[in-house]
Amino acid sequence: MMCCAGLQGQEQTVHVLSQLKDSAFFQSAEAQRIGNLLLLYQRDTGGWPKNTEMVMPLSDAQQDSVRRQKVRQDDSTIDNKATIMQMRFLAHLFRQTGDSRYRSAFCRGMGFLLSGQYENGGWPQFWPLNRGYQKHITFNDDAMVNVLILLHDVIRERPPYGADLIDEQMRKRASEAFERGIGCILATQIMFKGQPAIWCQQYDCSTLLPAQARSYELPSFCTQESAAIVSLLMQIDQPDERVVRSVHGAMRWFDEHKLLGCRLERYSVGGQPDIRLAADSCAEPIWARFYDLEEGHPFVCDRDGQPKHSLSEISYERRNGYSWYNGKPRALFRQYEVWAQRTGGPQALAPKPPKGEC
Image (tube, rainbow, N blue to C red; front, side, top):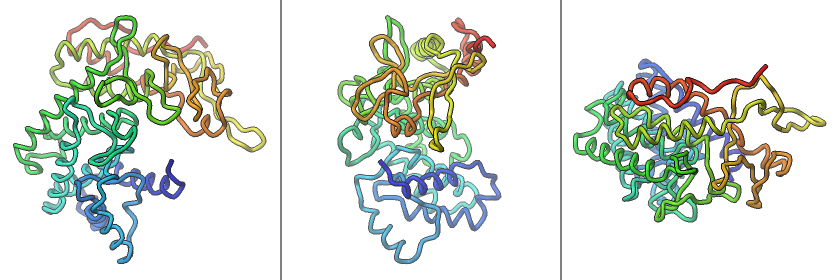
């Protein structure tokens, strides 16, 4: 668990690095100041750590401290958008400034990403050194999907990833890694009642079976991460039969497991904020974060690892410290309608899930 200072630093860094900015910003002294800090924080592995403030000015002593951390082998990661957001920022900087330092750092980042892929196509959270569930193939918080999106953009030379950023050999390696990654996604899709369904948050890197991460993250159907996976699959220009079947199956599962007539409500008791599911016949569909693998029933979980049926059955800390319900699959239905028309396959569902009756 990260401390409050770490969380605030990460949130500030993500906010600054993820904002969509115009070309004028990346020509500015401020953008180059931030870029130089990213060069400083880049590990010798080519990757970056997470939960670290990387955009605030540093004293000489602080810079020396960061430099001493460069040799670390255990904190380079793709979790919490780390490495991907730094690489994207540096690519924009190189495009606008032509400074070869930013290009070199981006290429080292690419080397890091490509070095972490398993033979089966998956990526762990951390490498080259990792432990415990850090070794699992990780869809949690879109870690692996974020890598694949970047590789897909690089392959297509989508700005800012132009032909001058990386050489043809690395672009070829990126293409091969992307194909292996899609293959891993298809291989890990869970079958439910004889049909392809959705995915777990993480998988054993050897057996490709759904695996547990933290005590409350049990092997299960995981909707939030699966929504990002399906969106990625629908962006493939020429999907083969396996990808088409995968998307249809996942969308069918989302349609069959949506929760109607309820919404997540934040309220207060004695000045203390809390959260609950409240009845609402007009609410948009939502999905639980987790559904059990046996029957496909939604559940929540506390730190004791025991699944429960309702938020009121778990501790206040876990109830309010995790995203147990989400609406991310809703956005897929319009994308699916367009995708089904483009691929020429049978459209299994209506354009979007129905609302509850008002």
